[in-house]
Length: 297
Picture 1 (cartoon, rainbow, N blue to C red):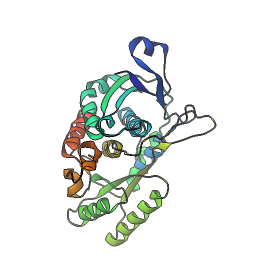
Picture 2: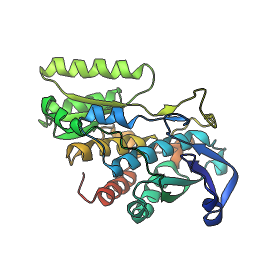
Picture 3: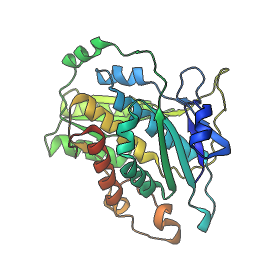
Picture 4: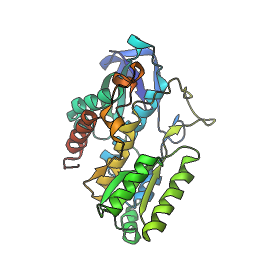
């Protein structure tokens, strides 16, 4: 399978010698000046109160690229539903990423139903932008003991209340937002704080397309099935957990969607979302355990 997704605009002469590149390829970049993908690691660090380590920075970027690649390639009908997605990604820790490449591939492919490949190359050295003083900022934050995905929908809201009221947990809520969702999520968190008369931690992040006068290769949205979104959701939750030293990550979902019951022809296989499929969650758990070298649940 030829590489059809080149990330970070770091196409160099050596790539053509080492890899089979599709012409033309799709380019994705989180570069703050030239990139077509919006991702702000500094803001994520500020929200979490601690600087992100290099593995977490890599994971944030890879998760963003998987999410945006899913939107870049149209699916066909029936037998043409499955796509070939082959990524060339510069990373800060190529040896570690190559060691988890097989389980990462299984994780994303199981979720999206596509043929997936990852190729990792060393990332060009970048200037440090994280503030060492961030670590002290966690001292005045609500005390959390786990991370919980919080979309703003009924399932995650019910799960949040259940964790606090029935399980006695203190979740750090992790939310991806676009447009008006940010305000909705904040209002629901305020409602939870009012109900339980306590402050809770809420980490909101944004990954989307961006276009400025400097943007190279403007992003084209060609697919709306969004089967790979949950990899991004759980990846950022894992980053939050790793950064804050938590081990438990909760994804709250109703049972019917979790079991992927094929209620019609349109809901067979990956035509029905696998965002809470047991096999996907098992693969993801193995992936982050291997990546960080510690145990998450």
